[in-house]
Image 1 (cartoon, rainbow, N blue to C red):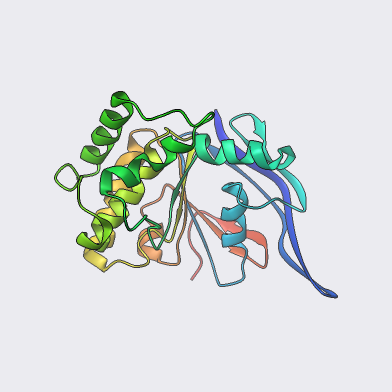
Image 2: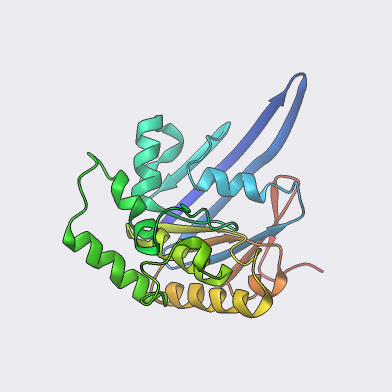
Length: 232
């Protein structure tokens, strides 16, 4: 079994004056290539903290995070930026699109931050068009976010997450701002991407959404409380 990533005895503490908030208290979990994991838990359970660490957006207080053979917990800020750009795709609940950019320009954004900031080529643009087509946006390339529905905006975010062929895709409540029909369409798109071999790690509070993942992890009080069948 080849791993896309793994965390070992991961701790994350926040120091608020004399108070220590232990957001993660020793989390260990493996993510095989091609996995589709739903992480669930109540507010304050540690699921968002874990996702931030997996996205190299924060550093653990203790423990190791290995992504594609790199011990991410030991990297400096510049190295972390490269990891985020090249090995991790992000899908956010609020889409995080650039309002003044077209659909195509939003999808191209990660390519603009590659090592050395090379200019975009015709090959890059065609690559982005192909991805836009894959997620159903071929007829929206020149539209701006305000001209799109919520589901279309999330499709742009998904296309953007794919553009650098990342090791893992992190989805933070990907259906949270969508109605049930549109949310189901987005989840079916993620399922299809996973079937193509993409590794997806998703935080969600919706049980129906979590049931579409291959594996469920339930968190409580900064620890993994269980895997598999979701608790009542």
